[in-house]
Amino acid sequence: MKTDLFINNEWRPALSGKRFPVVNPATEEVIADVAAGDAADIDNAVAAARGCFESAAWRDLSARKRGRLLTKAADLLESRLEEFARLETAHNGKTLFESKIELGMTVSTLRYYGGWADKITGETLPVEGPFFTYTLREPIGVVGAIVPWNFPLNIASWKFAPALAAGCTVVLKPASETPLTALAFAELVLEVGFPAGAFNVVPGGGTTAGAALVRHPDVDKISFTGSTEVGRHIMKLAADTNKRVTLELGGKSPNIIFADADLKAAVRGAQTGIFYGKGEVCAAGSRLLVERAVHDQVVAQLAEGAKKLTPGDPLDKNTRLGALVSKRQQETVLSYIQKGLDEGAQLVAGGKAVKPNGKGYYVEATVFDRVEPGMTIAREEIFGPVLAVLSFDDFDHGVKLANQTMYGLAAGIWTKDILKAQRAARAIRAGTVWINSYNSYDSGAPFGGFKASGFGRDLGREALDGYLETKTVWVGL
Ligand code: NAP
Ligand code: MG
Image (cartoon, rainbow, N blue to C red):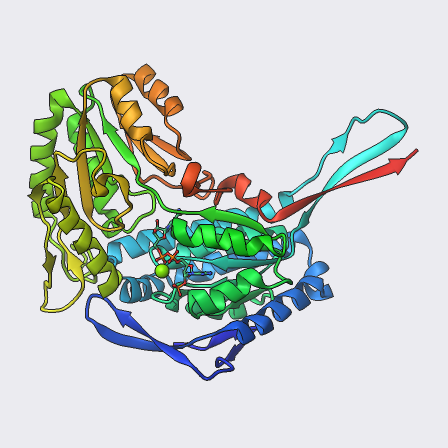
C-alpha cells in the first residue's frame, strides 16, 4: 500500500521526513505509517495543481475527455470495490456492509460528475442595446479539499469529482485518522491517466497541512467538511486571500414521529437514523421527537431494537454496528453519555463501552428517554450511537422543537398525512428533509446545511456551481 504523499503524479515522502501511525479502531493495531505533510509539502502540491491548471495538458483536454477520466476512475474503483471497502473498514471501524454502500456511492458520484463535464454551459442574454452578450462558466482554479474521517473517500469524492469535472485541479487533505483510501484512490488516478498535478493527496495534521492549504495564496477555493468549530476557523483564515469556501458542518438533526405514522417503519427509520455508521454521521437523526400519544410504545420498541444491535467485528458480514473511529472519539461519546445521566435523562438501552473480541473502541447502541431541550445531549452533536428522545404535544410544538437548534443539516418526518408532512417539511430549517425515510442519498440530490451546518452544497448540479466562476462577455454589434 502507498503511504507517501501523492504530488504531481509521484509518490514522495514528506520533506520533513515525518510520518504518523494509522490505527485500526476495531483491533487497536497500527496498520500503516503515513507521510505527514506540512506547509512545505502543501507548497509543492499547490504548485503542481497550479502548474497543471495552467498547462496545455489540462486546459486543452476537451471537457468530454475530462469526463471520461472520471468515468474510467469509477469503473476501476467499481472493479476493486471489495478491496477499497476493506481498507475503509480497516481505518474507520465501520462495518464492511456500510463500507460497501459508501464505496458504491463513491463510484456513482464519479460517474455522475463524469457525465456533467461536457454539459456545463453558459447562457445568451437578451440585454438592451446593440450587443451580443453571453456567459461562460469557467473553473475557479486550484481547489483545496479538506475532509473528515466518517465517510473518508466518499465525502472526498463529493468535492474532487465536481471540481475536476468543472476543470479545476485539486489538493486533497484527508483526515488524519483515515488517509488510506484517498491514497489508494491516487493509484487509480495514475492508472486512469490524469495529467500530473490534476489530483494531489497530502495527508498531514489539520493545523499544519490543513491550515497551510487554507492560507495558501495560490489556492482559489476551499471545500471543507468537518466540525462547525473548524469550519468557522477556516472561514476566517480564508478571508485573508478572498478564497471561496464551501462548508459542510455539524448537525443535531430532528427525526419527528407523528402519532399517525406507520410506527414499524418509523421505528426502523429512527434506528438507522442514529445507528447507521455508528452515529458518526453528520446528518444522524440524533434528536428523536415523538408525539406524546405514541411515545411509550415507540421508546419500548426502540430500546428493544437497540439491545439487539450488538457491536461486533466490522468484517463479519452480519455485523451492523462497528467500532468508533478512535479511542478519542470513544471517550468523547462516553463523556456525553455521562452528561446525559448527570443531567437527569433516562437511559433505556446501551450506555457502555464494550470490547467484543477483547479489543476495539466500541460503544453500545444507546437510547436516552425523557430528554429535555435544554440538556447537553439534546443540543450538542455527539457523533456516536446515542439517541436523545424528546416528546411533543402537537404539530406546532413538534416543529418548534425541531427548529430549536443552531444546526440545520437534515430532518426526518414520519406521518401518513401527506399534507402534514409537506407543512412540516416547509417549516423546518434544514438542507435536507426526508419524509417517511431517513439517510437517503443520491449523487444527483444536493446535500448541505442551513444555519451553523454550513453553506454551499455537495452533490447534484448545485455542487458544480461551487467550482465555477461566471464570466459575462459583451460583444458590441
Ligand atoms: P474536524 O476536526 O473539523 O476535521 C475535519 C478536517 O479538517 C480534518 O481533515 C482535519 O484534519 C482538518 N482540520 C482540523 N483543523 C484544521 C484547521 N485548523 N485548518 C484546516 N483544517 C483543519 O472534524 P472531524 O473530527 O474530522 O469530524 C467530525 C466532525 O465533522 C463532526 O463534528 C461532524 O459533524 C462533522 N462532519 C460534518 C459533515 C457534513 O457533511 N456536514 C460530514 C462529516 C463530518 P485532522 O484530521 O488532521 O485533524
Ligand atoms: Mg478533528
